[in-house]
Image (tube, rainbow, N blue to C red; front, side):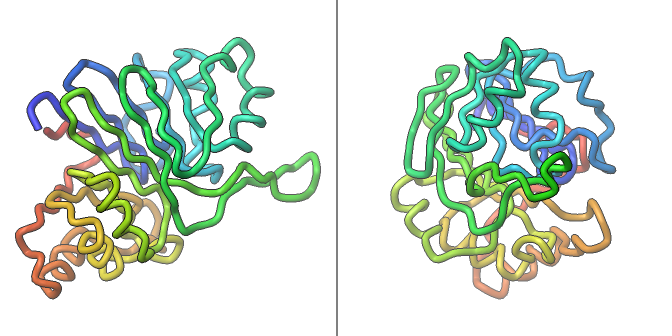
Length: 240
């Protein structure tokens, strides 16, 4: 994994530095209670990936994209909405859908399934705003390493297909429970994915997100997967 590093900024917000010197931002909600970095302090983003339209994942994405204009592959319906929200930045948008792969910023981005909901509140219309289905992403880096960010999801059996078809090396998985899978379910996801390194996300932000990395370690041990490395840095701690 030489040249790969990441920083978890709390919740599902993850910054990845690639071996080729690119910066990827996943679900950039820098306004979450655990982040010590404000969105306006983000200096670089080559590739922006938002897993779904909930505010705690879309977060600061529009502001960052408007300022830095990264390549932004996203699900089709989200791209239609964003094209009207990003003055001058819409040219970097790439609408796609699950199963598709797109070469972005010299990296391979594959959109995969997630089991969750999506959208946000449309105050003007008085109804929810539909922003496409939730997704996960598998990103192939310059050296062939594959990073899987699951977004918000429950465990689902077709994670075995993600393993077979995309062979991720590291997985960023939600463990908080309530809105997503909890540590016990995440341990099953690790088993289906076959990864040897997992980074828990989407926990500890609010009391309802009660799952912990230690609970994930215990659940993995119960499945005979105690050799899987659970990497759980503090928010803002750069990790390689």
